[in-house]
Structures are given as C-alpha cells and as structure tokens.
Figure 1 (cartoon, rainbow, N blue to C red):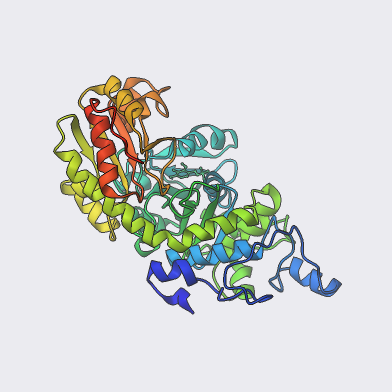
Figure 2 (cartoon, rainbow, N blue to C red):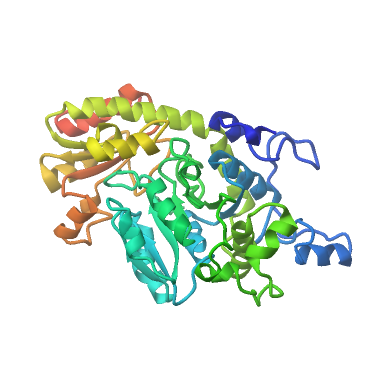
Length: 441
Ligand code: PLP
C-alpha cells in the first residue's frame, strides 16, 4: 500500500509489500536465518524451478528477510524490482555481467569509486569485457564510443573527490535511442537523487553506506526500473534476446513479462542466473541490519545534509582552507547539474583543499578527535580521509590531480553528531594549536 507513497520517510518504514510477517504477525521484520525451504510436494517444487510459480527455494537465490529489504529499496528508488547481494562491489559487477559477456564493451564515466575503477580497468578486462572511458562533461562522448557491442553505460550520481553530479538524463537519452541501458551507482546520493526519474534503467547501491548507515554490515543492491525495453533492439542486448541454455532455453526479454506480469526481465535474470551461478548472496542477518538502517535513512540523511551545509559555511571562511568542494557552492554548468540532480539537498560529502598541501593534510587528519579516520563514507558518524596519503597514494601526482585529489585534499563524510561538536573538531584540527580540546566528555 505505502509503496505508492513518494515520501522516503514513509517508504523507509513501510515500503514494499511487507506490513506484518505473514507467519507470526510480527511487525518488525524477522530474521529468516535459513538456507532452504520445504516444498509442499514434487509438483510445487517443479513449478518453482520452472518459474511458473514464485516462491522460496534456497537462500542463495531468495530469502523472506532479504525480500523485504529488496522491496523497500525498490520502492525508495521508484523501481519495479530489486536484488540484494553481498556487497556494493558485487552489485556493480553483477549489474554489468547481467548484460555483458566476453567480447562486449561498456562505456563509463572515469569518475568512480576506486574499487569500481579497478574492476573496470583490470578485472572486467580479464573477463574479456572492454571498458571505454567517456567524458561526462561531454555526454555525446558516450554516443561516440558506442558500437554494436556496447551493452551498457555506467556512471556514479555523486562521485568523489570532485562531487560533480553525473548527467543522467543526457546520457540515458543517448542510450535509450541505441538500446543501451544506463546503470547509475546512487550510493552517495540516496533520496536527494532519484536516477529513474531522469531515465536511468538500473540503479546500484552499496547498502554498506548511507542506507545501512551504522557501519555494521556490508551489502549491495541492484534495482530494475522495469522501464527499459530489452527487446526493442534485439542485436544490442543478446542476453535478453537469445535462448539461455542454462535455463531451458528461456529468452529472458520475451518470456518474463508474460509470466510475471511485469517487465522485470533484468532483475529476474540477475537473480535466477547470476545469483544461482556466482552466489554473492546477502546473509539474512545483514539484510535485517540494513533494514534497521533503512527505516531511519531519510531522517539521518536530512540531518547529515543539514550538518554538511552548516560546516561548509564555517569552512569557506577559514584561512587554512584554500578551497571547499561541495555541490552547493558550484558555479555555472556544475551548479546547473547540482540543482537538477540533487533535488533534496547537496549530499553530505565535502572536499577541502588545505593551503598547506600534503603535510597539512596529514597533520589535520592526525589531529581529529571526533571524526574517524577511515576509508568509508555514509556512516552516522563523521568520517575523514586524506586521499594523497591513503587511497590515492599509489598514483603519480599528475594522476592524483586528474582524479581531483590534490595533495592537500581531505574528504569529509558528515554524520549526525551535533553540528557544534563537528565544527569544534574541524576547527581544532585546522588550527593545530588546541591539543587540549575535548570533544566528547
Ligand atoms: N560504490 C560506491 C560509490 C562506493 O563508495 C563503494 C564503497 O566504498 C562501493 C560501490 C562498493 O561497496 P561495498 O564496499 O559495499 O562493496
């Protein structure tokens, strides 16, 4: 009922089919910590395996706790179906493997989470999938790099360190005409960006970040908009238009709408083929943990965004800060992108460039008392990292600059602590002269 609501505050608590547990009437979602499910009889089992009837078979492929998470996240993004998986990284790779095979290519933005960049430049290449880097400042470059073997486009909504939103609508429109779906990683901009509203076909999230929000559980999700037409350009999407020998010769693009009554061929194939074969399942307990986070996501993210905006005001007037990178401060074309795609706030990530360069960056991090020094974003706690001495330390200075991580760049992921405490910690770390400040009693 509430999945029709457009309000993320309500969807986080009630979205999807779940109202109460059908077996026990439990309001909180129970943890179904089971591997398998008893079939009623052989006919029942046969129908489940043939996809003539939907139901639980084995937790590698589906689980009732995980299903609630999937339906809620799908509702949050306005999608038709979702598949939860073991991590954000598995969500990214499975989202691509569900469309592309050896000999195919994908066209992507180079502004990516480091793990995804590695996946694209090394592991996908080793699997025979070519990755072509386009320039999101020139969406037409996606078209120019496409050919008959291009299976997908890929970009991150709010990639750090530059934090310039990806031109979703422009790239999706190019792909739509060519039969190429756009996959968007929306991990850094839940709620404030709704990529399906701008034409994206598929969304992935690392649930580990804002959605889980408490730093306890790794997880990922792939969401199918249900709007991409997989059969309109059959030669462009062979995995959906040729018989699948691993599933009784099913042609996914044709069979599924008739069987399921919804155009979710992509989500179904990812589940019954890729989870079956590659096995990156989310554990039911982690699904439960992430549901607890999802229930307060809208509340937390609102506070995180407000804290970030207030901290930006402080940072822009501090003499040790040479530059503040934050979508709310962008000018001209970048401002237009931020206003178009970040409709409910400018996110909770901030980049600062310290006037003192590398040494200032290290000293700042070492002086922090409240912020955690971790390679993570999206926790309820405030987090900081200095890429030049950590995540980007193996890159040449030139490549660091290309990535947007200058030697004095520090990434801040703002949490839900009181804003006065956040500012106090940043201030004492920037000033380097107040080692006796106690942020927490
Ligand atoms: N996508 C983005 C934007 C990320 O920041 C991350 C992790 O930092 C991932 C994907 C991978 O997620 P996970 O760590 O859950 O595998």
